[in-house]
Length: 152
Image (cartoon, one colour):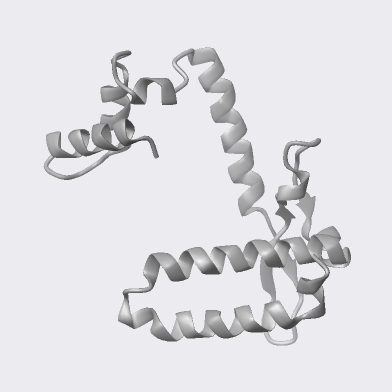
């Protein structure tokens, strides 16, 4: 993150007794002299269009399909956004297609591994999560040794 932006965020937090709220950041960024100003879309029509796209992404992200199971049905994501698909035609791929295609499944597993690394890094100092982090370490070892992961 840009050092100037980081300093401005700290300044906003200081102005609000250490609490950094999005509304306060936007209010601060309205000043064109700030580094934060350029990080926002100030054209309301363009911002509204981008917001609607964000809302659509959120709807897609939380869509689930129910998979019958012996004991209890499982809710799983209906669609995935994979890095290899971004920037091309874009869009989301059904979970069924991702799981049936070895290359797409390997890409999804790589994303899961990256998420585990971020989680472990973020929460490494919390003793109550030590068992979870240990399980993630074991899962990562299993992923790295699986034939699917090696095909990615």
